[in-house]
Image (cartoon, rainbow, N blue to C red; front, side, top):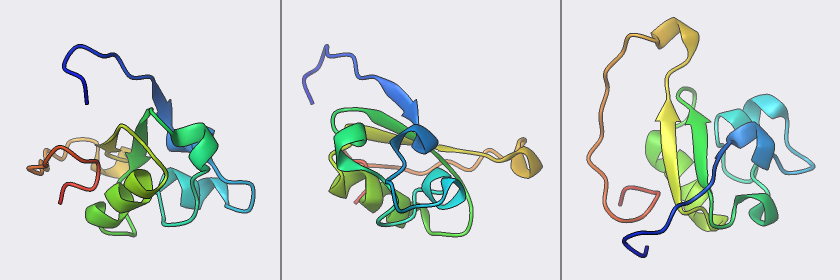
Length: 91
């Protein structure tokens, strides 16, 4: 990524693929994001159900510039942090 570039931020629900449910897209499950809506954007994904690395992979495979893993309401006070590399999958 260029050092001084701004990237749009969208919710994973805004990037939902036609055949995916809103819930699955919000969780950034593999195959639920539309590459045309994702490319070059930072995607906000909800934590839960699938591994964070799989959420990152779903974003990476569709061309996202980055991913933010968000807590749901039940886990709103959790401070889980991951060390990531320069790609959305954190690999």
